[in-house]
Length: 95
Image 1 (cartoon, rainbow, N blue to C red):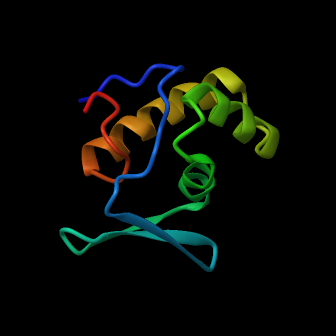
Image 2: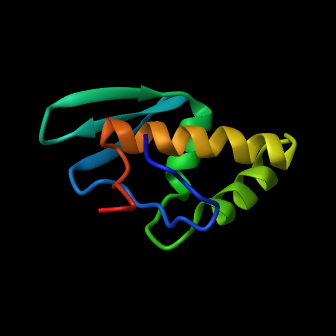
């Protein structure tokens, strides 16, 4: 699994697109046709991923939005980012 550090700049994969639906979102990977459903937390995370912000900046924004301990949020978002890279939704920062 890819190591995601707090200073890692995150961006969507070139073939991934997010569509907001109801209380969540779906992500479509164009190359495979795979569709992923996202809960509200993942949706909020992906909304902050813009190719210029690093993980720590995204966690700061999310900690303002959600009432949760920043250290816990940071750990959770690091794991989420690594999972999204593994699924091909986020671009591999090492590539």
